[in-house]
Image 1 (cartoon, rainbow, N blue to C red):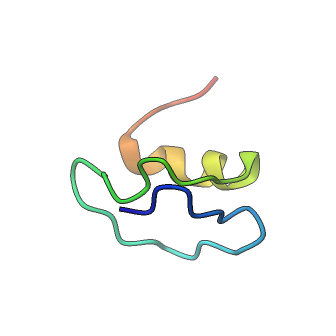
Image 2: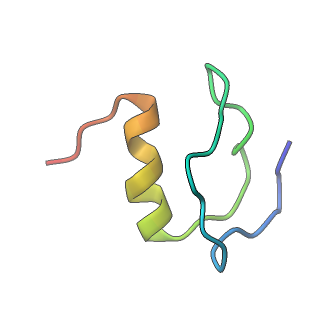
Length: 46
């Protein structure tokens, strides 16, 4: 859906995603955005 869209210069504020979250498939995000979004998928990073 958002394939090849570059979000690295934008702020993602409480994005609404489906389950499974296919909206971001192929999108480009920054490492900070990835850290924020990873919680939506129930992933814990230690």
